[in-house]
Amino acid sequence: MTVTRKVPLVRRTTSALALLAIAPLALAACTSKSTADADAITVTATDTTCDISGSSAETGNTTFSITNNGSKVTEFYVFGAGDRVMGEVENVGPGLTRQLIVNLAEAGTYHTACKPGMVGNGIRAEFLVTGDSVAATDEDGRLTEAAAGYKRYVDSQLTALQETVAAFVASIKAGDVAAAKAQYPLTRTYYERIEPIAESFPDDLDPRIDLREVDVEPGWNWTGFHRLEKDLWVQGLQPDTNAIADRLVADIQELADGVAAPDFVVDPIQVAGGAQTLLDEIARTKITGEEDIFSHTDLYDFQANADGSQAAIASLRPILDDRNPELAARIDQRFADLDAELAQFRQGDGFVSYETVTEPQRQALSQKIDALSAEVSQVQGVVAGQ
Image (cartoon, rainbow, N blue to C red):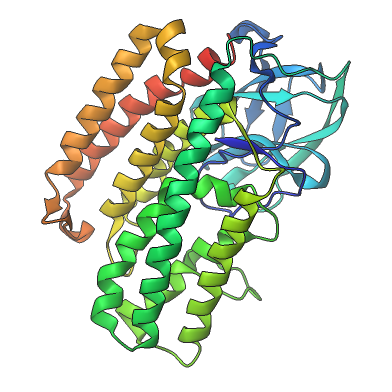
């Protein structure tokens, strides 16, 4: 789910999805020049290489078909000036092929990058875009309304996030560990639904909020939800816990201020792409239990990612229903199937500990998510007019 914002974009190395990319008013979705998979620029990735069949394109929508022939999960990015993310596809497992549609509305020098293992700066190459600026075309206003609808959803989640983070931090500062533990997964729900928003902003905003311990590199100051999670469940409140909590509040405020900025513009094409990557994040990283490793509250994150994906698709439904109603119906059924699968793990208003979920049950969840993702992966092309 991508937004247009003329700033560098930095993301945490292990999360999924950049719903937010940068492009000057990316409503130019209907001006696609790559109208079929046969026209796609192919990207063949391994653990050490990133071979791209073309190094240039004309302004407008460009389609990349990314195949991972390596042994590590990889990602593929298109960067604009200042390393702002124009588009990305994450969690491309070994042997998989994924499609990315990127709206490059302005001529200039961009960069592509494969990231084997989803870490580092990636294997980069220049990508030249030529031609005239592509004017936004939205004859019936549905793209504009889709963008506005998703923005309303983001705003509502941010409001709830700020309120719940404030209560969570107040409990920590009061030394009420039991209350903070109860609030932790509920607060994260609002962040997990819109996490790609944070990934669109510079200065490592998403890592500051949500970096996991396993991804902390030497010399980094570990902050955010998961540092507080470790304090609450494992090592007890530390001398700097309150400072880490205050930093979380400040980082969430920075996120809210960024979304409220006048140059924050939602790109419907990347909203569709992000809906898929939210699902892929569950299937390829969270399903193992590595996200909330101390609290084992992973199922809350699963539900939140699914909710965020469904909300993104909902904002695009007028377009989807008109152009491919059969796909829309299949997506509805797949979301219902996933909801039913998750429902068996509910306990009161929340979920059971992920430690109690057996390996066969985890596999069944993964299958439902993969089936849904396969359908949602087609939405980006529908919205782009392909």
